[in-house]
Image 1: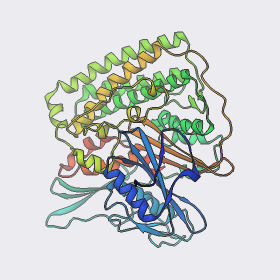
Image 2: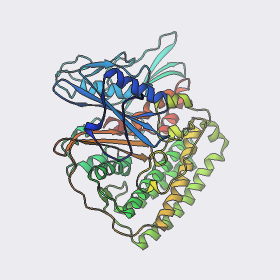
Image 3: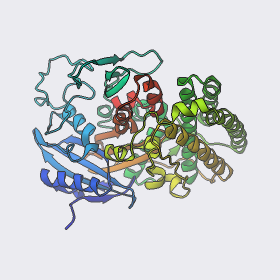
Image 4: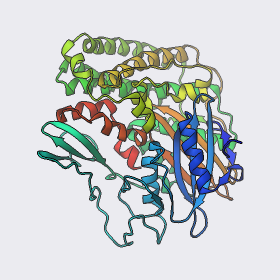
Length: 506
């Protein structure tokens, strides 16, 4: 007899009462065994249930079947940790401990990740009082002992214009033994702001929770709403959403390749890609008037249509920009000093990638075929697949080259969609949310898998809303990439992941 778990699919709602509620031991066994058999932990979170109890819910993604599996258990203030046997649970368990004061017994690395008070009065995993001030990154960092071993602390304020985060290196000379990453400076409480929704503010929260992924997160949110409502989105809207999502990928991948060039002092590609990223952002503005795509995607479809002249103009511009990107990026691969700096720098082994559950280009650079558009397709991607771009070496070169392959394939996809845009309306009517339902919505943003889980209460309002940005999975991958590297390689490795601080902090 197999483990008790509910089979579900991307953007297909299920009844809350249909989710198996199992013992804590069964829950642990189901998660650990499923991951060992090839599934991946897409989400793991707690939600309050009763005055002193909490329900832990796991969403396991199994790409070979294109299916998701959901299982739940009930706990009070502690439970046996999953992390020892399932490293993918590591960050999730720290998050649950911080949010709900539930202690995963035996967790090897139990620390806060966002540095805020527990949401559950009277419960705190570290026995802190409700009035105790909590400062970001004021914690016990991992220490490596030994002669000449020393700490190097970087941030939260950085030399470049990036978001705040603290990086603590344990070094021997220039060699990095260990990197610990401490975030939380941008925690805004986005998930809790969604409770009781959807409201007129919900869409704005989604579009700004990670500003460079406005279309990606908004797509995941809309898929969740539409699935709960049973809304049939017009084909034309699906196509326009996908065009916007791929342009978002083009803009960020192009900007990243330019930034990687800048980090090794290769200015021609750095200069051109910085400008060309702006050109791609301007294409999004052509779609909806906003360079980040805000206001374009809404439940039921899209708000702005594209007439024939605009589609033709978009095609002309994207072809011209792509030619310029090709010229700029080809310089990277033809310059031995650049390739020499990229190769074997910041390598993540495939096994490490699988153990940690990395997603997006970081996972594909390690040889894993991990892409929501292929594994769990929705919208127009259910009809038109984009070939997965795969690397092998797991280093900076692979992460850069995967981006270049994805640029080529996204351009081809956009051109195809614009040349055969379906006719018809761009938005369908939406209604009320049904009571006591749960839906998992996945979308492939430019950083990787975006996972939203919406749970409704008896009145059809959001009782819980969970967001898992791809950066949540991947920050530990960056830490592993720095092991046994020169500390001077950190900016290059960091840029090759280019993770979101605010998307993690929520």
